[in-house]
Image (cartoon, rainbow, N blue to C red):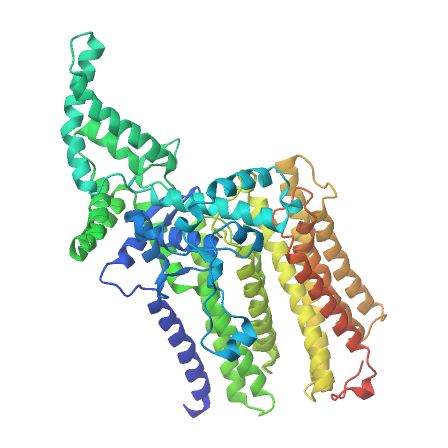
Amino acid sequence: MKRNLATILSILFFFGYIYSNFKKQTPKSDFDFDTLGKVPVIMNGRVQPLDSVAKNSLLAMNGKRSAVYQDGTKHHAIEWLAEAIFEPSAAFDRPVFRIHDDGLRAILPHKTPEQRDSAIMAALFGSGSSHHYYSFNEIRGSFEKIRRDAMEASQIESELRTRYQKAVVNLANNAIQFYNLTRTIHHGETPSYLDELAAMQTIAPKAVAETEKQQRGEAFDSESLQGMLGFIQLYRGFGENAAFFTHPAEPVDGQPNWDKMSVVLDEVTRDGAPSKISKNYATLTDAYRQDDVATFNQAAAELLAALDAEDAKAFSKAKAEHQFNYLSPFYVSIVGYVFVFLLAVFSWPFSSRGLNRAAFWTLIAVFAIHTIGMGYRVYIIGYAPVINLYSSAIYVGWGATLLSLIIERLYRNGIGSFIAAVIGIASLIVAHHLIDGRDTLEQMKAVLDSNFWLTVHVLTITFGYASTFFSGFIGIFWVLAGLTTKLIDKQRSKMLASVVYGIICFSTLFSFFGTVSGGIWADQSWGRFWGWDPKENGAILLVLWNVIILHSRWGGFAKTRGIMAMAIFGNVVTSWSWMGTNMLGIGLHSYGFMNSAFHYLLAFWLTQLAVIALAYIPAKNWKSEIRV
């Protein structure tokens, strides 16, 4: 028991943090927003829970998945969305639009930033940032100019737009999205949705009867048609503005087919009464406006049950995504990798096998959460784990961790755990910054859908990236630890050199097979096997660099130091093949262009070159006694 105490405590700490983070996702309110967040809808071409609609919408508007109101109180995304869709008049005053550009703020009402309580914090971070946040009502007066400027800017290629043009396009899109959300469940023209439906049920039968008389050429009562015409005009605009679909309908050609909330008019006209789903939405709206908690909670539960009965598959997908949102597997994995990093680092100066063992088993726990997160994504989207740059970063970290676990299991010296932690933290942070306000569970493009060779190509080539990065980070560890500590003795140096050689062999195989399978897929989808596309060139460059490393070792041209330096430069090659080729903005594979990310990529290359330079400091100046 004493031998495993550190392991038990570290794993308990990690899972305790997961549980704490999970519980924090539930809004502390008498209203059952947790159930409301599970309600499935269709938005952006896919089924998702209202919780995801709320979080993705807020993320696009203010870069966060929560909202801070005028009084400084913080609210969960689903709380904000409930107000936006049920009582828009209050939501219009919430400062949820984050605006950084000075030129854009100049055309909006002036806001004096709040002063920080601490003079030290103000000196370090500025006086405050409240002036960056605006409500819809504060934007409304300038929206006509914002709209005109956005339309002009949209005619310009995104890479050529100025900062103001990018900001005004982003604000216009977010403002329109927000407005559409407020008119998705109810148009807001009447105070009570249930009373409106009751009036509609009274008017509709008479209007239908008089319309039939008119069609037969008989005398009809035109006044009976006027009320219905008013509803028709109102609901026509209401349906056009809705941001998401709320009602499951009969599939079309085997594909999901949902209707918007405005379908309630057709339901009343056709059936004489609204459906259960429509009535539950109307009840939710009125109960929220009247602060009737009991009725709201009952209607939310009934709505969820009604949707489950109508479309069990959509309900299951939404439920899984809701769980995924609450678990936050990749966020908690970052925390886990940090903990593994600390355990591994402190195990060396204290020569502690207990801490080393704790790092390894905690890494297994973190890897399990990382894997569960990927499993959720696969189930939700129905495709292989990698569909975009965001998911490729998740997969690269996962692949490197898998290799690290194997190496750590073989040698049990903490180095594998340390490398896994570093790559895991780096890859998940990169993934986080690749979100950029977008839905990361987006649907794949048609050309990428249901293709066996695409799946094989993406998974193998990305695993090639992961393994090459893994060998490169081992090289970095060898250099930095050798220079600054006595950790790299002859035995460990030999072991690390062997690991790098083995991983490079492994990476060469996966990179080559991934490149060939990509050619087969390209031949099937585009009618040509190879077209010297930048991404294709990057892939073959990775294969060639790994082959060069292997031949340098086989031919005796590079000893341990040379192999390590070449492995580190492999990080440069891999990052170019993986990310850099997309930044050219050309070619069929340019699916992830990010203009601002080039500076980060350049900084990464410079750090790799700096470490390579450090590798050639004479061995006599190293703290570790190594053979180079």
